[in-house]
Image (cartoon, rainbow over all chains, first blue to last red; front, side, top):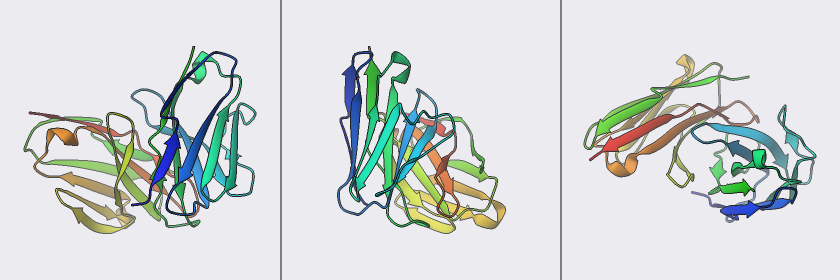
Length: 116
Length: 108
């Protein structure tokens, strides 16, 4: 299957600082990338969808100014958590797929963010 | 939006047993995937199966799109099969919607 690489795997940051998470599709061109958030023992909740070269579409209730998403190329999307607070601590997972419909999505290994 | 229900929420089995996990969805879909989330959080793609039947080793899956459900079968369970199994569905170019998952525990 296709490979999606997410970096870093874990990060600890101080409250008030910003953290950037990278998501790369290593062996295919990702026309669409997704960012999810997962709390302990819960399912994945979609935060936003990004298409290469255009602005991300955020799900209802997700603050676009807090969670900045950039999809500047067909192989790279970034999620920046700005002015992080302890309640932003969570597991963040990216996903990528090629094409618009009927294509399989592949996931990165996730990033565990802890804000202290 | 599409609703996805997975059952059972928890399943505890002895090594060697067989299991069936179910995924019901509320609308027609053209994308359905099964995943296994390992203890480190990585989502492993098991099947891309919007319809029909597929098999991969001890795992197989069947989706009956007209009746809006999918089944994941695990035969001869091993302790390494433990983890959470997610079903996710999508329609058209829309996002994947995840079910709440089935937490499978295989005891030696």
